[in-house]
Amino acid sequence: MISASNIYLVGPMGVGKTTVGKALAKSLGMDFIDSDQQIEDRTGVSISTIFDIEGEEGFRKREAQMIFELVQKKNIVLATGGGAVAREDVRKVMRHNGLVIYLHATVEMLVERTRSSKNRPLLNSDKEPREVLESLMQEREPLYRAEADIVFETDSRSPHAVARDICNEIRERWQR
Image (cartoon, rainbow, N blue to C red):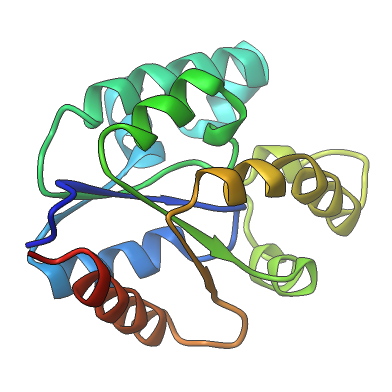
């Protein structure tokens, strides 16, 4: 067990937060939670539907409330939505309640990984996915990096390799 009771994965859509998070939780003997999945389970509708009805602002409010609730749990690996870091209150609650890990990938890799996904509301626009992802990265990258206790590159690496490397670093730096 690590000295920080929770681990929060942040990063852009398509970086592998859910896949890496599941492997990381298993390796560390922690519970895995995906904030987007929790929102869908609670509301009974998809994230895309929430975006359609309430817009991004409505979704971000729901996301913040969910994260505020989830950080009260202990021994979890939480995969957050790509835009969760946009809110200062969400960044603060994660920073004060666990270890924040930024999973990073190049825009080229993100375009490839999200290419066939239909459940990415911000990519369902008139703009090219690359243009949207570049804009989001320009806006959010400084926030991801500012909050991160650890930054891990995920480009062309298997989720299990990334999870293994994160486990090793956690054990070296934070384990009691």
